[in-house]
Amino acid sequence: MKLSDFIVADAVLPELKATDRNGVIREMVSSLAACTGLDEDAAASIAKSVIQRENQGSTGFGKGVAVPHVKHAAIKKITATIGRSSVGVDFAALDRAPVYIVVLLLSPPDNPDQHLASMENIFRHLQRDNFRRFLRQASTKEEINELIREADELPG
Amino acid sequence: MNVENAVPDQARMVKVPNAQGFHARPVMRFVDTAGQFLSEVQVRKGGQVVDGKNPMEMMLLEATQGTELEISASGPDAAPAVDALAQLVESGFGEM
Image (cartoon, rainbow over all chains, first blue to last red; front, top):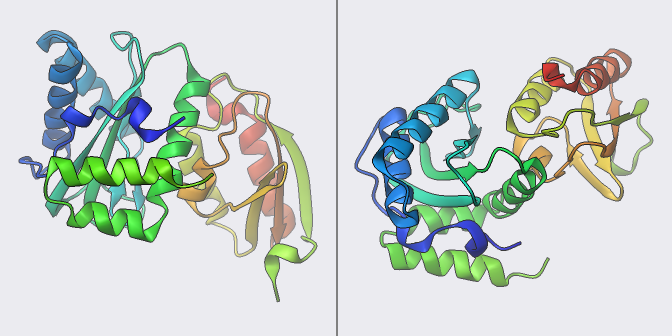
């Protein structure tokens, strides 16, 4: 599995407008919904579920990254997008540090194994210092998508 | 001392019992529990070994339902650490 199999290139947000956690989640869900043909009601319901999930336990894994996600009935195929914040967002992260890179992952409810495989893929790259640093420095959609392509080409 | 190559003080095999597997919330609970102990904690899946106190590394295990994991610990509280962590996994993280 590659990042580009589930990250929707057009939905990538190089400069998040929202500066609070719930706003960032809504902005990213809207972007993904617009690019994947989900209507506004579905998007609102998904955003609400992601926020509820986040309230149960932060997905701020530390080192400036958060991976909010949810399994939702309106999702038929696993999809994700990346948002970048230059100011930093409070995700109540494990290390209490602000979050600059947000990966939103939406999964169908009935495929937990594929969800775990996607998470593995995301973290395999996010744990690399260079990938995180270059993502933080990327200021356009094209630059972020280029980083995703390069990551997919790495061996293993 | 190279902890990765050392024989751990305590180790136990567990099987991931819940349908959703070792997903993000269970990983955070595991890391949180591991952090309450002084001992080094490692989790092994086949030939892959990760730091049980590092949530990003833990997500790399991709431990789906039925996956067998070895939880090991080295340090002054290795036995209670392995007990607590094995129990957490075997309980299905409260999802069963």
